Length: 328
Image 1 (cartoon, rainbow, N blue to C red):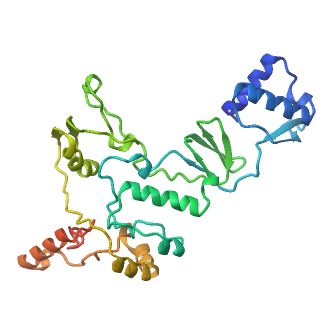
Image 2: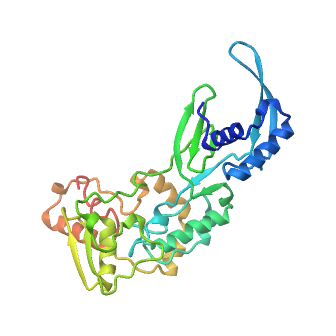
Image 3: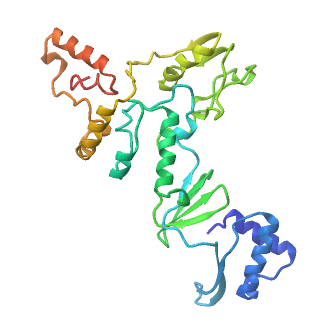
C-alpha cells in the first residue's frame, strides 16, 4: 500500500537523522521520536497512542510493527467539507428556485417548526444561515473537517474498506465512502480566447468574492444568460454605468413572483408538514406543487390551453409550465 505524505516524510526524516528504525526501539521511544519529528517538520498529526503488534508475512515469519494512532476517539463519521453551493455562490441575486419551506431538511419535525423562512424563495445569505444553524443545533461541526479536499480514494479489496487521501496528508480507512459532491461542484474555468489579456477584474458566479463586488461607475460585460446570470444581471445593472450581455442561446425564463411569507401561510404549511413530506417522497424531484396534468395539450381547445398557460406563467412556481400538460 502506498504511504501517505506525512508517513513518507516521517520515514525520510528518520533516515536522514540517523534515528533507529521504529521496530528496533520500544513503544514509548517510538512515540517520542514521532512526536518530536512531527513537531519539527510540521507534517502529520500528533500521535496519541502507539501499539506494538505482530504481523505474519507471506513466508509465515513474524515481524514487529508499531501502529500509530492520532489523539481522541475514532470517529464513526467524518465529513470533508470545502464549501458547498450556498457557501461559494454569493453573487448578487443568488437564491433558491424551489419554495423555501419545501427546500429544507425534513429529518427533524422540531427543526421544521422552529425555523422561520422570510420569503417564498430564500436568498443565499438566509440559506447559508439556515445550514449553519442546523450544523450548530445538531452539533455536527465536530465531525466536519473544513477546508479539506479529498484528493483520491482507493478501495482496498483485501480488507474491504476505502482508503481516503486528503490534501492535508491525512489517510482515513472507512467502510463506507459517500461522495455527496453533486453534479456541478467544480466551477468551470474561463476558456474564452482573450480573457487572459483583459484589463480589469473578472469574476465567476460560482466563485464570487465573499466580500462582494462594487460595480458602481463600472462598465460590465456578462458572458452567458444561464440561471446565475438571470439572477445577477438586474442587480449588477443597478450599479453599473453600462452593461453588455453576450448571449449564445436565449434561456427561457419565467417570473418567480417572489414575496415575503405571511404568518398564516407559514402556519398552514407547518401544520401539514408530515403529509407534505410524504407527498415529496413520491413527487418527481420532490416538487409537489403544482400537480402534473395527465392530459396532452391537443386534448383541450385553444382557449383552455391559453388559460392554463397564463395561470402557469403567473403562478411563480418552478415547474408550473411543465405541469400544464403531460407532453410539455
